[in-house]
Image 1 (cartoon, one colour):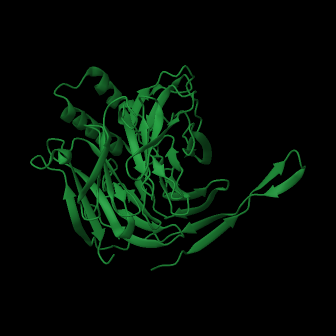
Image 2: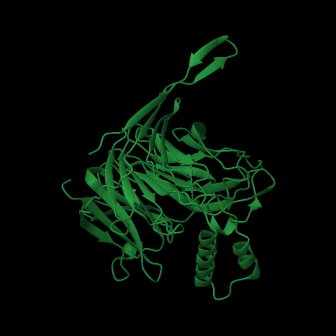
Image 3: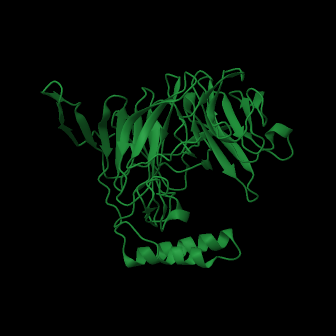
Length: 413
């Protein structure tokens, strides 16, 4: 295992108007990781598999999302039936809760969910709009109302606070859901991509900003990284926001101490931030982004046109014009996915051999700044959920769009 080659420290200073004094900000540690890949063996054992059309009714999944609790139980949210199913560490069925309806603990319009380590469940429900909180036994505890100002609700992935009582969200992260919410408010204006901690311990959400990610000029966090908006859309600031191909994605994961690891740039730069401190550590690999040449532009336009043709028998004129007029960043963004493991590992997926390929090698880093190695492209995917004792859950989709959940364990755990 290689040690970081260089550690640079910078000290920032901020002036206090009231105290007329200069106050030092926390040091920001920059750790340079090795440039050369060290390949890992994808040694995982399958523990159990869920999802079948011939099995019990609860296991006939539609579209699902998954999360673990600290006891190794897996929670499966099936959006097709708006219900959450809980299975034990060996895949044995334990209970279900939720379901569509207007009563306590029932859902109007589920957008996403997450699970705390103690088994408490938080569900974003556009229908109220609020976060619904459930106890570990599935009983409804409370609804936590959203800020009255929000008229457009977006779901970009809830991340549980390991200490409980709160979730994290990253504004501008890849959207899972989008809805108009009639609350009589105004549309929030974003000039950056913040990571926020949402306190859900009461009956109204309390928001705090943990860190602020980079938002490229003339971009809008509602549009960046969404292919159907890649020539521009009416942004939250009331103007047309231009998005471009190969954008720097806003990707984030929560670490065991409550810090957040995130990527917001075109380069390989993983930032670690915590509440009240901001970014205090940056992990970098000296990998050079691919320049966007004419060949790269032509290949990406062709890829998108082929993808559009695969989704529809007839590709409309507007879609063709949007692809033909697609704009680009000067280089191809390196980082395409980021997730954090139960013990503080940071999984970082790079692009593949082609710029438009999101399924490249996966690097495994630690929150203290070590590079453990990389999995070759195609040998393993980034898990949809991490659990204790090396558990990982992967959601697989068959040719009919039916979801299956496969739970594996890292060998030796």
